[in-house]
Length: 283
Image (cartoon, rainbow, N blue to C red):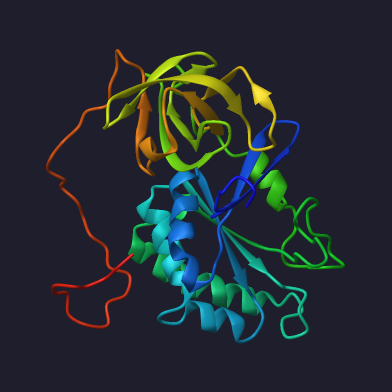
């Protein structure tokens, strides 16, 4: 609020012995679907949190529910892996029931396949956010007797193969948010190559030349460089806040991203209650 910035997607980070993760916490309520889209566009891995509690899964999954919409948005934006965590398995209406878990998995699998997800891209796992079961440490027989010798949620994340490896590609970053703080600051994801402090870049498509004066991680630590896959904040010299829009791209002067006047697109309408005509509004 002090910076005049609207926080659309919650951001945090954590580290393990093998990897560093940035969490993009997208709101689940229907009123915040655009915010969820912003989060999905920056993510490499999507985590779909499902409630196992009787009645809650059905509400989210039935027609018009947010579970369907979020799974579809994650697929549209090309995330590489989908982890479906079935939460609240400790609830009195569930009691770590294998039958309940399989029912949820079976219903979701059919729908996810229709969206184009491959089974090799999807992982299901039961958890309890309240007790922490199967989050950091694997489940034990006294908690759940039918899900043994399998990695916990964090262990599974740790073993995921590298997703972003093209460090030598042409440097490029997509802008997702912007705000004003002693100059223009943009937030986004590096989608190719790597960039360093004091580099000169061009904002496309307006073709405005800027200089990176600071690079800041989401935990507010300054760094000298950022590479493909990093979600970062850049303070830019030579640009105003009004020059930055969501979807604009930062490129190097000798490798500008191409521009076009025609878009060949596949439109996916998640919900349409009436005919599409003049004045039709959609997200």
